[in-house]
Image (cartoon, rainbow, N blue to C red):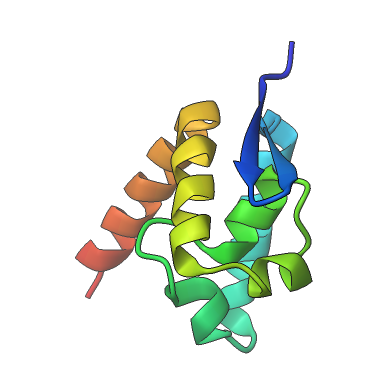
Length: 103
């Protein structure tokens, strides 16, 4: 059973959902393609522990809706995303560690 959790942001409830293994594989494939293309530093770097694309992938928020949120609101979303998707964030952390270790 897929885990979900609602998060109240102002007058709206955002749903955070658990990713499937296939969705994590797709994320990894897209991450590899991202290296080859243009990188949006705000989307991929504004938050220390998740890309905005990760948050959109795990919630019912669109990238445009994320643009309208405050960083403090996104931090709340990331906390719940980490709770619901610990496997994803463990993999993400290992990939980032390996990337940092490469010359």
